Image (cartoon, rainbow, N blue to C red):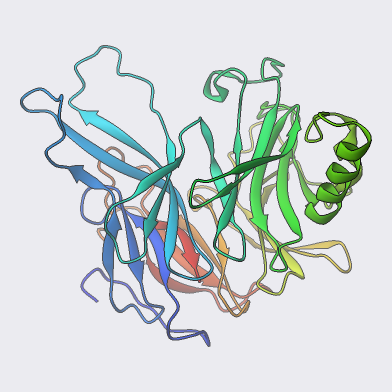
Length: 362
């Protein structure tokens, strides 16, 4: 391939797609690609033309960030922002991200979550709904350390037609909707009591959606109008999966296609100056054990989210390429030029996929 990719197809459906982000063209774009490396096409992002209200010489760039492909392979959701360059203000205005819905074959997109959504979200297995986190309190980008300034996080389920939404959880702290179980009955959440990178920790939590909705219905019958999503009523619907693990921080968690294992990115935080998240592991739900399978310390640390192959035989992750590798170029920095690799759940068979990051494979 002209971009230097080297891909060997795993035993997955020939109709499957990979999506990923890349700066290979000089700007950040979302690409689609077949598992064998064919049909590589940019489908989202770049310069927006004929935008009204801009001064002469200004351009508007659409910059996709974390992106997920729908289970039916027809749509994608992307946490994206539109940036004007050069900016006419000093300092530059604060970025404003929204979640946009688009088709895998490109074309127009629409905003489904304009209200300060979190960068991580998850599709329902029916491809008709998704769950995301939003923060009704202060802007989370201004909250650091042990500050209690954020009142709560809302975990919201939204219909992709935009006809309804449901607040399934509202609690203090930082809750991230990481994944949705294949049977549609559970949400996988990451929970952080604080945003302190030195003294905090996080856990992987399971929310039982069936139990939650059953309790909501019964409580509405007994006490009409009471807010189910917040307060102590929801506690019995939550189960910590990693509370007993000697891990400081989990930063990503994805369920395997059969729902029996969770691939996680984590940091043990044994030292306060630990540079970041660089370990990959597999958590077995039946035995409740975590198996570390790979360690990528700086400068090879894991970059962004991970995913499983459709048949569950591999985990895809992004990590830094060797310094000076010309296959990936960042427009603003040379610090991280990422590439995507696949690795088996036992830590063997690592292989290079392509340059870029934020892979999703359906």
